[in-house]
Image (cartoon, rainbow, N blue to C red; front, side, top):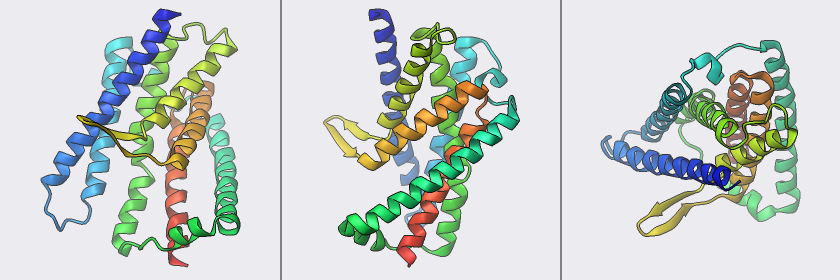
Length: 244
């Protein structure tokens, strides 16, 4: 038990160190760009997602000595993946409608703050939507679902195929890692620079769903599609509310 706990903590430390690297290197990359370049954040976002994908694939191949198809970059159980994705689109759409309606009727101050967000230029919004429709699912799903879940199933929950409690542990722990990764902080001195509780809860819930689907289909297809659909639809929803 102590050994497995140590492995779980080491995985968390690895994720946080990678997060720090992505933040620092992303900031350095942004500083190299012209101050008037309006797509700098998009370029940084693409860079960070590609780095996560490359690290996830490289570490998986190095540690497990397997190909990317075993990581989940495949079309196994394609029909099931598509069905689960369509189920998710309905579920996520219902959640968005409930959230927007609840905010409008019960949290007027939050609604006004959402309405007051300044819309970007059309070309910037289009680029943002294009980014959200592909890149988040590319890097984060390869790393958090593909690599991290395989790492957990090997080091912390090796009997997950025969034990439902172990499979539940993988789902909860991997989604917790995913949620924590959305908290940004500096190390020297230690200071939390970004924390959005709604984002954390959303990442926890969505991460759990992505993990369930990945374990069920042995493919990243459905998590990839669902992740990008979540980000894109939420961004469009924000644009609509700000532009009404």
